[in-house]
Image (cartoon, rainbow, N blue to C red; front, side, top):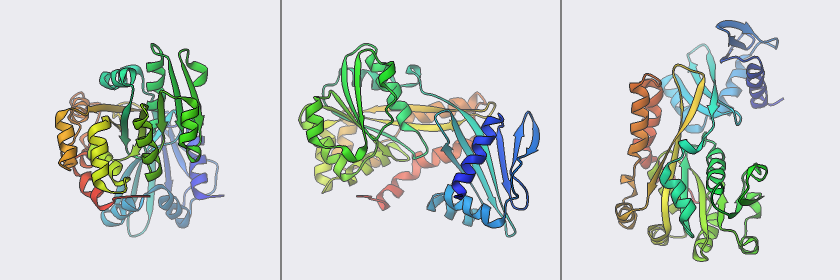
Length: 340
């Protein structure tokens, strides 16, 4: 059995028992916290290698370096459509401990989506929207909510690539067709005469298709794993054969940057998404044309996080990694001009 599969099984068992925490440490069976009581799961004791393998599967290379350097690290991951994990890992000379806080995920609703984003998707006939957020954010949930919201008042033919086919049963005005990302091609898109085309991942080939779609009068939304709005645009630019062509395309055709973060609330077992939409106005367009995308930021998300802290729903400690990513990730993005 794979360790990650075993770890997922432990989380699933914890959720079934309505636990809020999962503890994994060397020499003990996994334990859960339920109804303010600590209970051991009826499984084998964790060996040092078990814990090491779990850590290796959970953490990215960057997070692993942080753990080895500072002796502790925290990451947020989505477990399923209804639960997220806030994982704390501590490492000493003698042992490593994993604590997983299980949070019920607040699914995005119409009220959570920026009004400007809904308006643009409802009214624009062509152009491109970049939906950014870290890899732990399930951007499919935001897309699904957006499609549901827009289709309430507008008839749309929507084509998705690489996203779950979970829309069709609930929509009255929209027809949604879903295909694997590997099947994305212009011939299929033309045949469907889609109003909106959505891609679950950004690659050079996907950006080439997005460019063709926009040139043919189609609205395109592309998901981008990125830690800030600036990083989102930088990754998009890195997918073009040369940066100048990317700058020209985005300056003229980018409708806006939707960006979301996942936060875990302090006083409840909930996680929720905060989403902003940065419209491509004259100021943003000039930033792109001058190749100064580092100045693109989400003041609204910072304000929303500060409000949660003021209301004592979020701690400074939990908000710190988000602020660091929002303000410092552009330098990392430059180092990772990742043409896949």
